[in-house]
Length: 254
Image 1: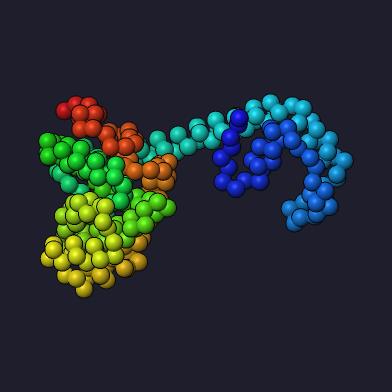
Image 2: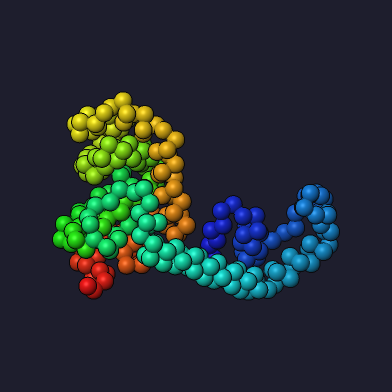
């Protein structure tokens, strides 16, 4: 069975129906004029559908060729961005929080409610602790708001903590409380860390906070990232909580 994932594409829906070999002409299509073109002649429509019905491989081959071309374009675009991030340190870091002092950048796209990101935190902390003079960890926000209802709020709060020099402490506290995050968590953590609460609240609700998180999201989306954690190391994009031993293997030789 051929499954098509098309993001509400009428064209793909039509192709899918044709491939099931259950196509019947829809009179409404023949009778309705649209702003994009003239009326469809019912007899001509029926002839086209019959040809496609008898030769579904033509549609399948065209679709597969289109998908291959799209994949190649996406891969090239992704590689161009990875190369730029690997060669332009300033662009790669931007305004993101960092940990470590090394020349090797490890860029992490993460979500504070993602359990796999919590696991990745342990592995990445281990990498930085072991190679503090070789590695710099760069944190990028990628809250999966469709499945994690507090992910965006947590990201905004961590950005506010960053403005007071406490991002990593706040980052760790969020992961420690990951299973119980709620609207009261953010002020509670800020209080424990001794943050200026008035400034903290202003910052996390500011357009600058939202813009910073969304900029990270756009970068991740441009890279084709659709889940967390995602890690960039030595020009490679990795998915999931990669073990420390595997991360070490990717470190460039001295």
